[in-house]
Length: 388
Ligand code: FNR
Image 1 (cartoon, rainbow, N blue to C red):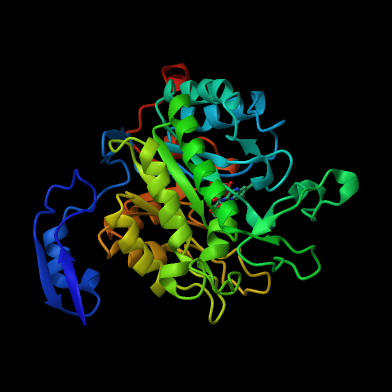
Image 2 (cartoon, protein in one colour):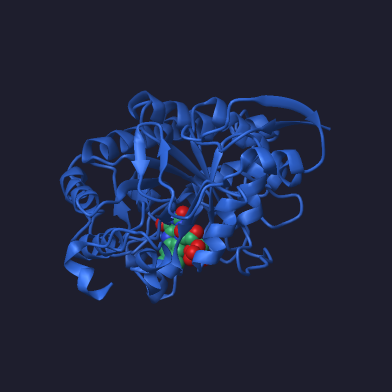
C-alpha cells in the first residue's frame, strides 16, 4: 500500500517538515527513518502556531456543556468557570457546544449562538479568557435527534410537553433511544437552513472575538447523524454512500469559510468510530479528514462514540489517542482527547507525534490548575507566585 512519509510536525512551525516522500511501507510512524528525521518532537511546553494564532502550550480545554445558560446567554457561571482554567494555564479553551438554533440545543440551558444578542456576553467571556493568556475557541453545534432533553442532573431524559419540549430533526426518523419520540426527517430546505445557521453562528463567534472555531460533528449530534449509516438511511444525495453522508459536513465547512477568516484556525470534532459493526468507522474518518484538510480545516479533534445507544465502548486510559494518530497520517493536525490525566501521558502523545495538541476534559474540572503543575516552566499568574 502506498503511503506518504512526512518529515516534521504537521504544524506550520515545524522545523523540519519540508519533504514528502512516497513510500511503500507499513506503519510509517514506527519507521526508524521517520523517527530520526522527526527528532526533536514537540514537548509539553512547546507553543504551537496554527495560522495566525500562537497558543502558549499544546494543552487545551475540551468543550464541556455546563447546561447553565438562560435563553442561550452565558453568565457569571461561565465567566468564572472558563476564567479559572485560563488562569490555570491552558493554551486553548474551547467553549462548550453552543447551539446554532434554539432547536439545536441538547437542553434548554445550553449556550446559544443563534441570535446577535448573544454576542455581547460572549465577547465578555472571550476578553476574560484572553486577558488570562489563553486563546478562546468555541464549538458550534446542532444536537439533531439528541435535542430537547433534560440536563444530566435532571436525568437526561427526552423532554415531554409539560416541560416545554420541542420537535427534533435528523437525517432519518430514527430516535437515538428506541423508547424516545422519533425526530422528523429533514427536507432539503431544512438542510439548507442548518448549513446557513452554522455559517451565521461562525460569524457571531468571530464578532465576539473567538480565535478558534470548532464545528461539532461528533457524539451523535446532527452532523454525526448524517455521517453514520446507522442513523442516516436516506436514499437522496445526503444518504447512502460515503460521499453523500459527508456532504452536509462539507457544506457546513464551505459555508463557515465564507465568514470565518482564512488566517484563523478551524477545527472539526469527529467521532472517529461509532464502536459498532457497520457503523461510521476509523477508515471513513481518515478518508473524511483528507477531504477536510483539502477544504482548509486545520485540526481534527478526535473523539468517538455517542451515536448508537447500544455501543460497547472500551473506555480506558487514552483509549482514543490512536484515532488522533491514524488521522494525523493524512497530514492534518489532530487533537487527542479522552481519559488523559497526567503530564507523562501528554508528553508521550506529543513526543511520539500521536497528536499535535491534547485536550483535557474532566481532569480540568477536577483540577483547573493542572497546567501550572504539569509544565515546569509555565508562567504563573503574578498574583499566585507565592504559592509556586
Ligand atoms: C463533555 N463533552 C463534550 N464534548 C463536546 O464535543 N462538546 C460538549 O459540549 C461536551 N460537553 C461535555 C460536558 C461534560 C460535563 C463532560 C464531562 C464532557 C466531552 C468532552 O469534551 C471530552 O471529549 C470527554 O469528557 C473525554 O475527555 P476527558 O473528560 O476524559 O478528558
